[in-house]
Image (cartoon, rainbow, N blue to C red; front, top):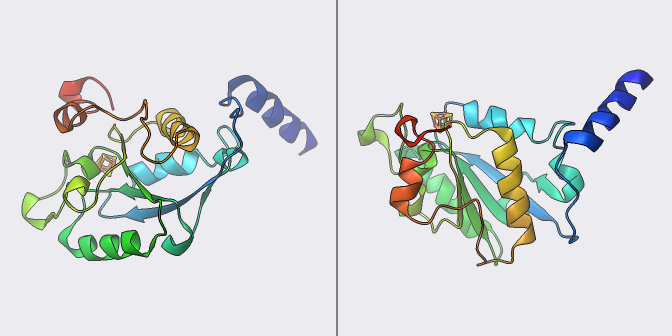
Length: 177
Ligand code: SF4
C-alpha cells in the first residue's frame, strides 16, 4: 500500500496539471440532463488521483444553493428542462453555467429531436462549453481550471467563439472528440 501511494505521488508530480497560481475555489453542481453517461465517466476521472481537481479548489456539491457553477451534461430532454431551470434559479449570484459535451450544445448523436428541449443555451445562458463526445478528462480538467482562474464574465480559452464553431468542433466531422 505504501509503495502504491508513493508511486501515485510520483506520477502526480510528473503528469498532473500544475497547481494554480491564484488561490480560489469553485463549487460545482452537476446535472445530468439526458446523457449516455460517457461524459459522467470522463468527469469522474478528473476527481481521481491523476487530476485530483479537489486539491485545486474544485468540488462537486449536492445542492445548487451551495454552487457557483452549474455543470450540465446530456442533450436536455423535455423532462429535464424544468429541474435544470429550478437548479439554476436556486443558485446564488454570480452563477456560471458550463455545458459539458456535444449533447449539451445540441449536437447529440443519440437522441430523437422531438424529445429534446436543448441545446442548453436555449434554456440558460452558457458561459463555457467543453467540446467532445465525450470530452477527454484532460480537456475537462483544463477547462475547469481555466474557469477557476477567470472572473465571472471573463473570457475562457476553452470556450468556442460561436455556436457554429461549437457545433463543428468535437464532432466526427470537426476532427476530435
Ligand atoms: S456528448 Fe457524447 S458522450 Fe456525452 S452524453 Fe452526449 S453522446 Fe454521451
